[in-house]
Image (cartoon, rainbow, N blue to C red; front, side, top):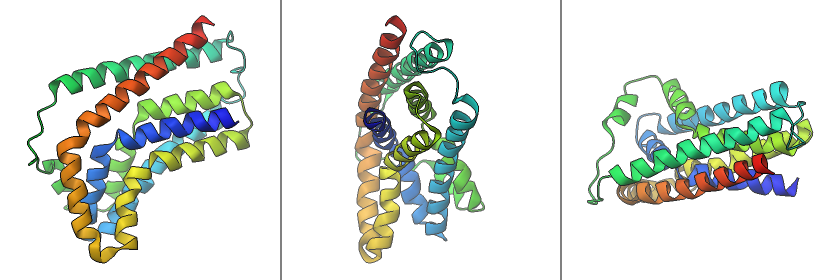
Length: 222
């Protein structure tokens, strides 16, 4: 169980630190009317998406033979990791090569401004959409291959969810804990994220993708 928790926590942190756009989205939501409600709704949508993946994993897929590396479900899960890792790696490399050089003056994406004109529940839908599904499915695959009980699988999923939203929840925590200093702090975070984080996130994603490919291939070959 300890190895599983470490694996899903690592994947959760990978989600957290490869989601700069999600963090910027939360910061922008906080600057809008009913900002806290919109930001919390975004986070709620994020968690609902993870819960949906977990429900499918626990109530539909769990119980199949993932314990043996030679079983069809286990090999399918390993193949899924290789596929997800390959897709993430290809996308990250292409995005890294095509990224615009940082000029320090990037503006907020125009589509974010449109959220202000919509119902706050739209923020929840945006949160669900912006979850990194590739890494989330990889975490689900790790849980399934561990062949643990429903309770342990739920604990692992909670660990993944908690670690995945560390960076996304940080702006909300900043506003709640120190509202008088939050505006300047969030503006600083937003400027840095818009100017510098994309390249870092893509490099981290490449590393995670390679790890997924290696682990999945190792299970398939072994």
